[in-house]
Length: 214
View (cartoon, rainbow, N blue to C red):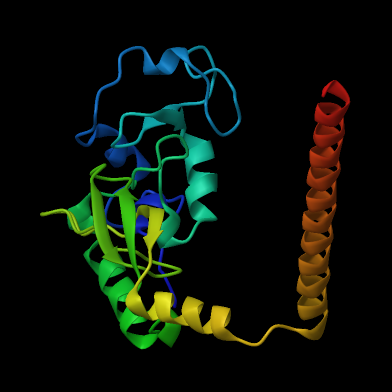
């Protein structure tokens, strides 16, 4: 799947929006955010000579670091390096989401995974939802979101998966496994015999002691 980078992070001031315009767009304000270091180069943001830019999540990094990072990233990987929120607004991700949806339709999951579901965390809206599990893209099911910027928290088994597990358990044991099981069973029987002999000896000792007292 070919994923085109948004014009806003191609290292140029042309296109839909430049990096400077992204900085002035609406974003979550974080107090004293420039008092820290750039998460890319670890250089000081406040006193450094390089200009800083703000992502829509409110985190800041050097403008040149942001350009280098996002220029080398695929469009579906344009996220904040700190909180993993998408760099672009949801309204600007229409083309990207359409490409991902087409990719999903063209590449179905293997048969043994098609009924599996997953609990996912959306890095954009922070909602926990359930969706059909995929190896590559899992769509947030929260109302009004639909982001593919998600992490799988838990895979949930299905009847098909349970059936496959039962089939594996029903498979005949390998020769070495059967031999090992037989050895274990023989050891258990030997231990039981030894315990029975010890019990008989204890009973005989007790009986002998009673006779001596009489």
